[in-house]
Amino acid sequence: MKTVAVLGAGSWGSALAALLCNNGQDVILWSHRESQVREMKKTGENDKLPGVKLPKNLRFSADLKEAVSNKDLLVMAVPSVAERETAKKIAPFLSTGQKIITVSKGIEETTLYTQTDILEEELPDAVVGVLSGPSHAEEVIMGLPTLVVVGAKDEAFAKEVQVMFANENFRVYTGTDVLGIEIGASLKNVMALAAGMSDGLGYGDNAKAALITRGIKEMSALSVAAGGLPETLSGLTGVGDLIVTCQSQHSRNRRAGYYIGQGMTPQEAYDKVKMVVEGAYSAKAALAMGEKYGVDLPIIREVNRVLFEGKNVKEAVWELMNRSLKSEM
Image 1 (cartoon, rainbow, N blue to C red):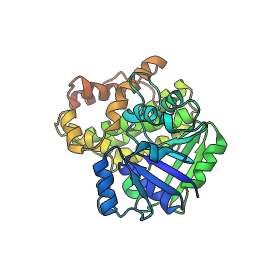
Image 2 (cartoon, one colour):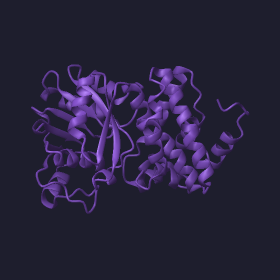
Image 3 (tube, rainbow, N blue to C red):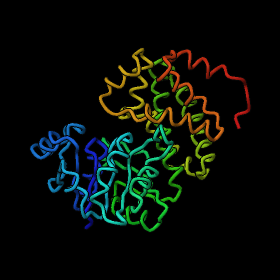
């Protein structure tokens, strides 16, 4: 049995806390909201996953020191925009060599850092990795078959995490291309916004298939230019995560894009979703990375124009459809 703290009691953090608990680990789930902790203790449920009973032996806390002290593993499940702030707060309570897995997805706009980059900067003595893949919390908590990948520079650490998370319904692979895994995880949210916009406009299956296909092309090109391995984006954290995020009813990014396609402003769409729309935070950073590495990202560029420049969605589609003709490869 390992001691684990999951930081972030959103749907994903709660689902992973339950999974680890059911796998026999000693787990505490931390929320920054004391009211949420009180409610979970009282009802045994999380309002982010309505109707689902959490394991009876799962513990809850709003005290960071209590949550993170003397743990075998920390799972960072806070929104990507809160990763750095949370890392700073937990730093005083960690011992040298603390093992941390981030399950947050996003690129920091000001630095173009991935989530593991942020953790390595703020917690230089920690051993860090990432867990990612096509894995909606709503299905993981129900025990539906799910496949993910754990990426870490330290292969032994990746294998240790693999064993802790894996069960008969949650299959875990390992990989060492941390950068490629994180770029795929971040950019797929931007593409899901585009896919949702297409759905909102009523553009059908042909357009969705084109967005997914050309989307993975942009994601792969940027990943390789930044130093990732070409094959990573053809795996779970690339094609796999992109498909599920662009297609699923559970995808908050696709849903926000849908509302925008229906005529809402981006802010109105975010408010209606009532969850953090990570793609909105990664879009600017992705475009900046493209400029840094000299990679053309037409879909990501048009998403940025819709989100931040007030461009009409139909005009953005027209721009994409009427670019100069070229070879597919």
